[in-house]
Image 1 (cartoon, rainbow, N blue to C red):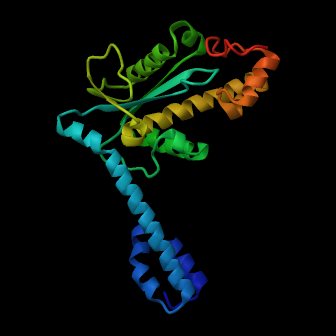
Image 2: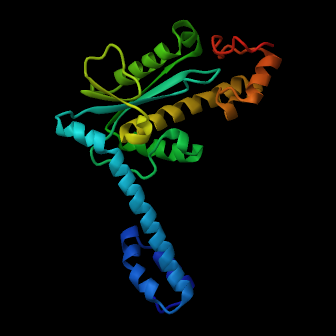
Image 3: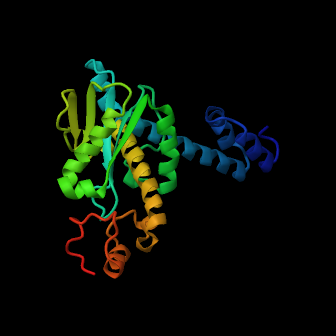
Length: 256
């Protein structure tokens, strides 16, 4: 195969899975043709990136592994999206991942592009053992404050799980009213795989909802700003006044 033309070599490699491709690297790197050696270097770099990502994912699973060794079996990662925006709900997700879950790219949702979040969202909801999502609207946020609204959204997400978890992993908070074991992890969406997965589910769910609100209130451009206080969004509030989905306690200093 390696004595054929460059185009044929590339076509052949495309038909192979990753493991089969990597077996060809030594042959490619020893080829007398520079273009073929370059293909080998590209595969070598790809292997390095995938190995690094696999190692990162495994590091993010250490907390769950340690908890399983202690006897916990249903470990739910919890995270929220939308605490800071001027409009729309706060969302929270609870995700229970299987022990063998290893999807490249799962990370703090803020570090991912919208397209990548959507792709990972599908993998997470398809491969998780269980997941639940809760949302609390702007009216309730104004009534009970954003922290309590976040707790409520997280509680709704947990209650939507098919089985009650015996352990909750949370990003820098503790959930009042739950007797099961809880572990609060600072920057948990960067350190713990199930929390990172929950951050993606919460973010995608809320972003999709904000797209629906954009259809009702296009003047605020929720499609782009997702309710956050961008300069354009603040200008729109000053020009049009607040909508029914704005958080009044968040926009008290913005005057029309």
